[in-house]
Image (cartoon, rainbow, N blue to C red; front, side):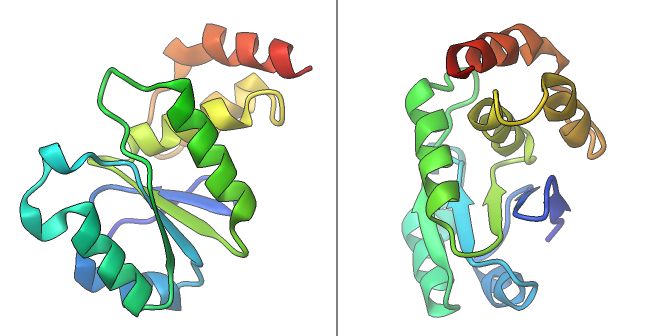
Length: 143
């Protein structure tokens, strides 16, 4: 398990295991968001298995699969809605944490400066510079 905090309230991680849920809860997280489609992973890590493990550990579990190269505004809106409903810190995961970082940044456009939305994930090796135009456009729609 490799938790990479983007903010005090939101962290990302590469793929986690069902057995990690108790440690995630012990680390203070209240919600886990699964951004990885089942088609990418073995049945042992499908959303239903992960959800059962998360709920057994006392975590809220949200399924919001982001297909690589096919991110939609529905994904962004679902992530924002889940984050807003969380009563504590959120951990989102995908294959590497990149998609979870991207969907976070897009959901925060207009709330945080574009430079910050790019720089924060970059500290963990995620390059979102290519999203600058999209982040600015979303921010201007909200502003």
